[in-house]
Image (tube, rainbow, N blue to C red; front, side, top):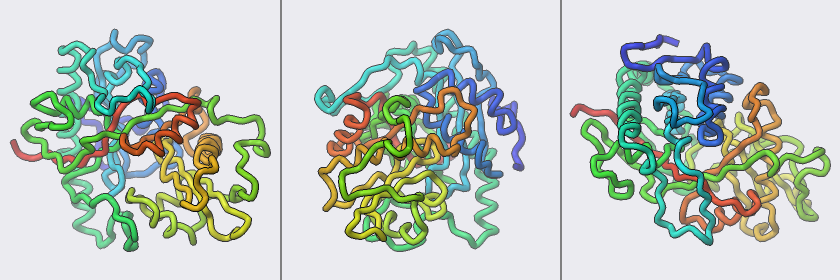
Length: 376
């Protein structure tokens, strides 16, 4: 790791202190901090030399009431992830947003979760922090990645094979992809206080973001934990779980069914569960993964097997197995929480998530955005 702590930027790199400093601070903000917490926990268990755990220098662990402390910001950064999510950001303001659940029945389709209930002074601090963080990534971390690309013939592990389904477009450095970004943070980067029709601040070029954001579902451990492996989340008659996760020979099948550009190495690294039918025990008919950030990912049931409750049952099973696999470490006192991101207009998938969560709705809105810091 070539970059050292840069105190002049206002940020500290905590890779060697994550378990003592950063993780406890994030755990105290659960479930708001769940995506970045899981991403850092996964990296602590499977460390990569190109990844950085970064926080503002004022990060604190004393947060029984986050509004009593000065706002702080944290990030997981691995620009070498290429075309997959490279940055996950969390602001302590996210824990101050009132907790409201939106189900399909009470969702007007217009709500964008932001920080409007938080004082302008606190928003100003967070606004400066996220802009400084993006500048830090651009000036301190991006050069290392660009130098690597210029000296390497290797391409980022993204779309190795032509896929039948159209995937999200690639982005090119020095732009980078931020995943699961709270829509409140997006609005802090605008000059017109709008999300869907955002005009972004000088110096920031936003190549893309989800104007209709994804919605975040949170699942507590009692939703998917069961007493024994044998009786856990039983499937309909004729279906059975694979004895192992995704097999290498089935990666192309999985990739052909999703528009999310996940590489072969990623799909084989993260926890997965596959389902087979007795009529053809060689080819899976459904699969699900827990991503690096502990979220339900690439959930799919082949069309001819839908309508039997497999998606909801499989979702609970991958949560159970994934969180029990040790992939995210074993020292977290709140290791049970998982989460999922669903497109706002994907009613079918939202119904599945509400079924998995016992009728609970989504908690906040997020986006995947490609940004670039440019000369003002």
